[in-house]
Length: 371
Image (cartoon, rainbow, N blue to C red; front, side):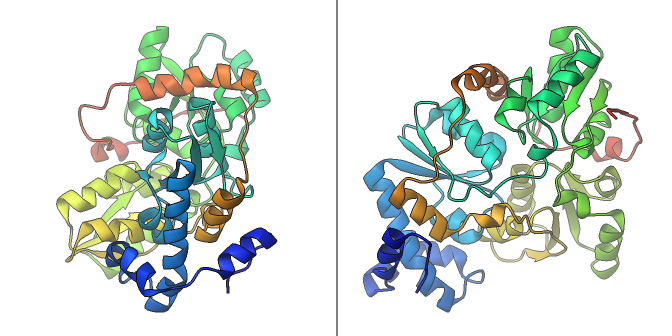
């Protein structure tokens, strides 16, 4: 039997069983997960999935599931799935009273910023982000003093206090578009783009706007290197390699395609390469498999995000059952941060897919790195 540290949750978990009714209720979900979840695992997961979906209906709740969630969460209980930008948009327009964030803490804060009247829950308070923790609002205020008059573009992978000091947020899907908009809107030829150094360097290769960058990084993507790509190509010369723009520039230069997690998923489902490598978090490939159909083989390498993996079915169930852990943001911070996030959401969709020009990606462009 599954166990938690809460006797109320333990009692509820003890009552869950894999019955013929549960098997029938979850059969459609299991059809999407075959090959990723063993029959033995499914006997544990199916009752939880059914119980979570029932609790969602009873409490008027939705689960926002990021592309890096495990398949049981992504396909089993996620009401809205996708990248940070997509989930932010859904948080803003959802009619649900309760949002359960299937992702990390900064995502839950973003949901609260956009929907302060809703209850936002995160199943595990330890689900942080190395990139978001690399920069504080106080540090950003000092950077702004150093570069007066320049617009601040902050990656959405930031804390609420950083967003409150930001002019407009961006995601990897629209970072180039946002940087160029900010430069035009402020009438300048340089923009501060924080905190991801590698995203900033990759954006710099896509635009003529000067980039002032900060030395933050995602612990998942910074571990990839160009040799990883070379090794994959040596073993699988026909494989298509898709990279995430949080990876170092030499990794991106060696890829066939670069884009946000949603752009990578769309590439696979639309082009159906026979062999494909996703240079990003491991669960991404597991989740795309269900939509890719037969004939697409996913190869490794990949890296696990330890923070994303703190979010589990058991945690989501306990969170809804006991209404924990509620994410709060100071009202003054919300008022300041909402403008930067809303500006990002209000940006018109890109004319072309959210992908990076791979010819430009192979050229070196300097950034000014804040020391």
